Picture 1 (cartoon, rainbow, N blue to C red):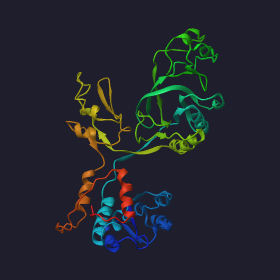
Picture 2: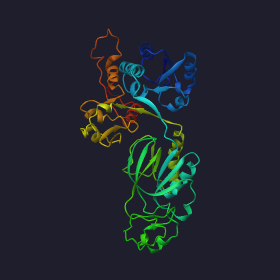
Picture 3: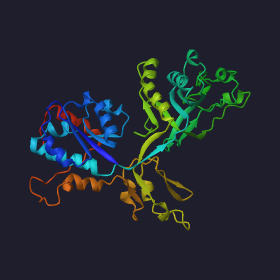
Picture 4: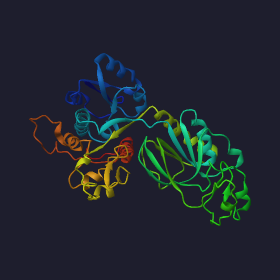
Length: 413
């Protein structure tokens, strides 16, 4: 497998010794360009002529141009993170470190393709939810959980299975989301839409559209229950679990998970049309995902060694308490590990007393390269070669980019 490195001087504005960088990078193919973002087709030609399987591109200002090539390409930012913020010597040494690490270190985690299926749950207010369901119904099996009613004009046919209620809990991940729902007291299957319940409700707690539903202001007086001819009303709390492959939630809720693949959260706009417009990009991505979702498997667990569930032992429960992403689940006293839900936070690995959990991103290998593992074997470590490693989360990257744009100088960490 051949790999390539494509360097860009950004029309000579990056203060890096690119010839020195090229001599030390160690890739099968290394090319230096002046304005690579203006000639992305050259990368494709080199892939074909040199038989490359992957490439590292040191040009991030227009990533979409290179992503459109549909090649195995990863990116590194040598402009804002090196050449625009450090002096030439420091920037060059840092660039060598970053490029060599990207080439020689294993990729983060293991990739897997998840088939989410075609079942999609839309959660949100009736009017925008119905419009989104109508647009998606031809490409997926849509179920609509309505959290707010609508007027009669919006209650048109959606091609979706409609229910009302509110989300109580969420577990699982793409292809296997398990949504605990506190169902609406009115059964849509049993209701005959006669309207008698609305006539007798003393506090107007029952809505007619898009399906009959009882709001939270209900005081449980029981008059609707007594008069319902089809016994469609059950005023006791009824929690059901719905399984679905993907979720589109319109509007924020503290229960919703943060940054989980297959679970999309969109904002409420100023009106129905605005809310629909904000939700459409997520709806399109959901439909595209029906062909499969690629995601990392950042951790691996050897659960055969866990004491939980063996000979009646509960186990230490440390990993179960530490995981906040629904990836560690107890079933009949046995602990199971849901690889799909795992986000790679490492909490389980840090608390397990017998090291059953292993992180897959080889962070120590990366640290070795970044701190000097790329130096020739006969090199001696000096003050100049001593390195400082800075850990940043993905949310900090835009700040580093901005520092580069403003040419703010800082040590070559």
